[in-house]
Each structure stands twice: as C-alpha cells, then as structure tokens.
Image 1: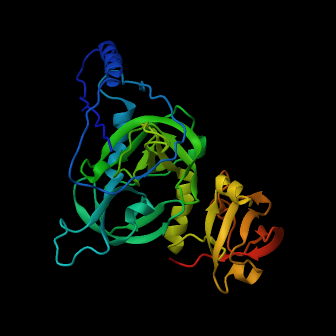
Image 2: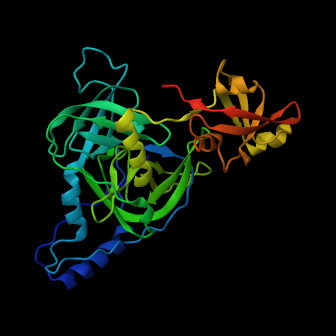
Image 3: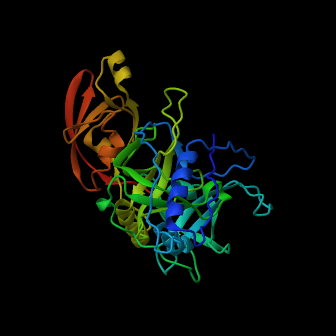
Length: 385
C-alpha cells in the first residue's frame, strides 16, 4: 500500500494577511506535485479497506477564514477544542502468547472519541473485534484499561468504557444537515504511531453505499476527501462547530477492476445513525437485529443467467426450529424477494432484512423446482454471537 504523508504545517506569526493568502495559494498549487513513498516494518490494524469503487471526487484546496490578525483560523480553534476528546484504542488480540510483555502481544490499533462523563467512548466494531483486553491512550499520553460495552457489526459501531477523569467530551451533531462541499476535520491515530493526527477536507457526498463483497453493503455513509489511513478507524469526523457528524470507518483504494488506485475516498458512519446505535448499546449492550435462521450464498447476475435461475440467495442450510424452518423454507430454495422487494446487487439480502425488527412478519418469495412459492416468516431476535 502506498502511503502519502502530508507535509508539516507551520503556524504563521504576525505576517500580513494578504501575504499569507498569497503564500497559501502558492502552497496549494505545489501540493499537487508533492508526495513521498513511505514504508515500514510495523503493521497496525484499523481502518478497513475495500475495492468497491464508490464515486471519486476532485480534491481542491480548501480556503478557510483567517482571524483579523492573521494568526489563527477556524480549523485550529476547532482542533484545540476537539483534540483532547480523541483517543487511541489498543486491542490486545485473543490468542496472544502468555507471558509476553504488552509490547510483544499481538495487537491492533484504532481510534475513538469520548462522548460522556461516565467514560463512554465510541469506536468501530472492527477496532475491538477479537479483543482479549483493551486499552485507551488519552490525548495526554496516559493509558487506561477499557471494558467493552457492546458492538454492532452491521453498522461497524462499538462502545467501550473507561474509569477516571476525562479531558474532554465530544457532542454529536446532526448529519442530516450536511451539504457537499462543507468543510470537515478528521481526527485519529493513523498507523497507531501518529497519535491525534488532524486532516482537513470536505464532504464529498452523502448517502453513499459501499459493499463488503460478502452480500452486505454499509449504507448512508458520508464520503470525505479528508485523508484517512489505517488506524483512523473509529475516530470522529467533525464540522467546524466541533460537532461529531461521522465516525470514520473505511477507505476505498481501488476498484479491483484494474491497476488504477484512488485517493481521497474515505467514508464515515453518519452521526445520526451512530448516535441511535450508541444509545442502544449503552442502554442494553446490544442492538436488536432480525433473524431468519438460514445460511446462504448470493447468486450474482452472471451465475443466475448461466444456471437459468433468478437472482437472489441460495439457501444452503436451514436452522432447525428457526423462523425459516417453521415457515417451511428448505435447503436448495432460492429466496428472491422480501415483502415484494427483489433481492439483487442493488438490494442486498442483508440490507433488506435489516429494515425489519424481531417480531415482524415478512412475505418472502422463493424459487423452488422451477416454481414461485410465497411464504410468511415471523422474524425473531438474532442470537448473541
């Protein structure tokens, strides 16, 4: 993976604002020509990468207002306010050899942010996944143990909790009001080494959907061109009012269809989605998700055409006594629609299922031995992992 570190920024003195603006224009022009390849032996897990192409956006210089004396701007003020509430999360993975020092343990690194004086911290599910134990490194460098409160794998949101005094608390903003082109700031610890790194960009798009290649697509994501790298996972994406409007979750590097690589394609879970899930995790430790009781394999268009069957999901196993079993679904059936919505690449099965709640009765259409069959299935609660 090619990594492009940003050049260090210097804080201006009492230089004339007009001179500063001219210099800023020159620097913006030069930035397109600067880039340094970086390599290293340490690997930190964190931000997920995907080969889903998404939609690229041109990266243009962002001009932000200076104060009257030309020595400060809105970004630095926001960074000073938000920075103390951003943390690094260290995941000591299960299976690490016993008797080793913490520095020798197998570990992953991500980011998070403090949302409550009760010690609650928001991050990504994939940052804490597989943890034997968790630690949080605060902005001042101090380290505290953390307990896992709950996770939601589908939204890639998790909550952990720490004890003791906390340096700052961040507030969620309203992601619904975001507009493309609006300035945003991403916080996190890329590669685990560069703690409390700040990058600036814009909202490149809203309502994005990015697939994981396994039949599920995260939806309603915020796209940004603020630089995001492995280790930024779980860090906040904030507006210039210092409000969290997204949780950094993944980055697209290439389409997987060729050798071309992409930059500036970062994605964050919208704050409105994250806040609802966080509230549920804090209240109950989990998010109620519907359960059908089957294992399945997606049937893409090419395979459907080759086999002469409809698109949908092929049922490979039916859990005995589960909702599908009780409704009469069988191994070998092809589930093609839920409540009239066809299952296809634009409408993945899991995304359609997650529109419903435990207890809901849904009409399913299946393809069985060349015939269309309709069944009603009452969903139950997904068992704990």
